[in-house]
Image: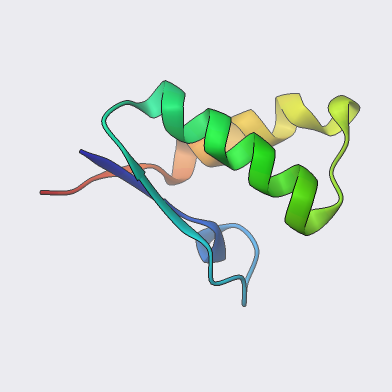
Length: 59
């Protein structure tokens, strides 16, 4: 299982996601970035990079 906490990228954001794969977490991160932080399609390559860098393995 893998986890991404948005606060690792956006201080103060309380969103946290868990999924079996990094790819699923990147998809969750993209959707969250759009809905919660106003990111648009041109921002998504950068969103992918920061989400992937912040993913960690959890039990």
